Image (tube, rainbow, N blue to C red; front, side):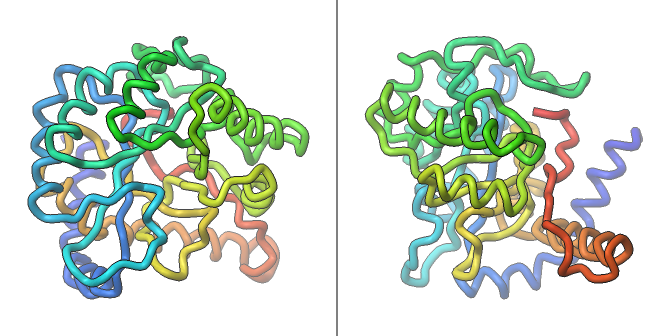
Length: 288
């Protein structure tokens, strides 16, 4: 089995071992946000199977509502799509509409109607897909989807200087609001790259929520500007997908936090002295 397949299998086994504890945590009304990128025509059947699993076993809520307090009931899941690729309008969005599952598209405003021009790893397939154009986005909004920012140019925000950072965050929000007449509450950080400076800049730009790709559940004590999401892929097997939706993959977020603190302690003598710079959780299908 290739190394990547072995890593994937190891994660499934670890998540299975953590599942009982996850059930207890979900009893405290924690929410899982799952994130996709593209869903191509060959993946639509697998995506439908995943969404049918959500519709049967979860209350699917709007991503903008993940911080709202709710009465006990079914565990809750929210769905987002980074990059707002045009192909999901043909594949994923009709399935969501049929099953009544809300979602949000996260739009890099500088690439509307264009091919992605941002950095991707060599094995990332997303370079094949165009970003939605204005009509595509309006159709998605009319179907009940929410609109989030994914900055202007899909930049690594933690590497931007202060001026560029403000332009990426405020520019995307202003452009999307003017063009589509929809208030933009949330930003999804490209590559999941953020730190305290990025969070503060997002707050100053007028965002009330910021989503990372840290594999963490969302609860009452979550920082609104660093909300975790668990990466899902349309070809995830149903066991793998079910474990992700259960929150069991949040164990890998805990491992990442421990490693960051250990690294900070080694460099600075105290984990509290780090600026909490965070880069994307491992995304084994490539960089996007």
